[in-house]
Length: 561
Image (cartoon, rainbow, N blue to C red; front, side, top):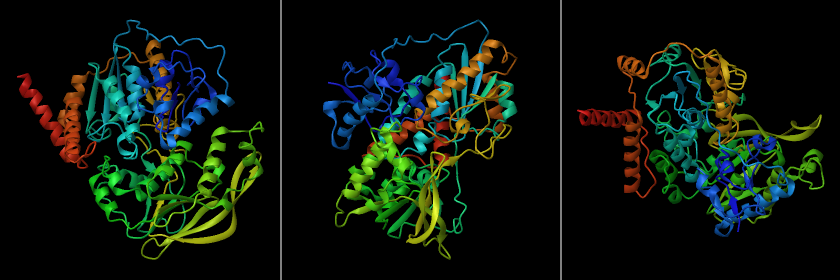
């Protein structure tokens, strides 16, 4: 019996180093790793030891005889990868790296941000006992998009935070929640009190379509909607018009699929998740019966991943609707799904195959609908006082030097909808005191090094690409730059201490919630969830969270006396 990696795979490759027979690929050292949707276990090599199960931070690995529903298909997905990518024959077992210690004193590193990239960077740095890490986060909660971006019906994906909690619970790590860099402490003050400053602040802004009517009421960024239903404090008071029967999503990446699921799935199922209470109440009153996703290119170029696309077929009472006529392929795309072609791409072939399977399904009376429209691009959001629909142009695919590009045909249609959400990507915001590339929306860097003593990791470093685990390799690359500069003596200088930081934040009146304060907030959310039959009920008011954190700090002081 072999083990199988399934939908929840986070690509952080923890399982790769745990496997004693090298049967999990692609590894971070292999070219395919940067583009892969997920990792795969070779069923012929797997020895059924279960080491990968213990190492997986998101519970994505199962014995093949324990798969059910759409997960059963992952047995074939894993096996198919190795039919196209044979196991390497020159494998040498990985030896664990022992971080060097050269008696250079203690290195103090500030990490700004508390999402996956920040946590992976901190974990990597904390492997050395001669490094102190202080992490700064504006919100009163850590974990970034794991908490505020991962859909509530994907609880397994959020399990990565357990690994972060374990890895960061060390004497040489300090957490500062409720501390805003640029307000409570400046960039220059971070440099004064740390040898290096690493920015891992993510990409919190959204991209605009640049079309007429985009700013009408009822037209929003999907990023705002995601933050709203996940209980992000900055978006808890937002309202979205769910009174109509149709919503249009511009874009068909994984975020768009998340939003489509949340808008159509059974509210009673959502009530068993950690979705924000205000969103759950609004969705109970929602009239939306159909969500239309617009993709400017064809099914072979769709931005969603196969695991997320496949999972849509498991939604109770929801049909996935695709017009078979929209699945005709151009020559370049056809070559990608032809097993005999040198250009064959198994992930693309799976995408097209799944789309064809959905197109062949019969619609069910009374079912809600998630409709995929390919070769469709918005040219205007229509309406006078508020959004009433979207004007769409049909595209055609053209071959531009071997690359498929979308070109408008001049054929237009109108789609009526009272809610329009654009889901065309995130972009970073400028960081005060740090260089910024406004065109790309990133901090310009070379392998994570920005300037003297300044570094970056995650989406603000490379742009919004990859999944949670992609940040592990990204952070490791950046940390390698930090350590190289440390070893060379480039970071050696006199800086302040953690006491200096604490005193500065106290003078500024910063909330400064630490580990114990966050644990108190976390416990209270879990209790609220237990009382309501849910995994947790999130706080959406920063003031409430800071008060709980402050109470925890006062209790610790009393105990210390």
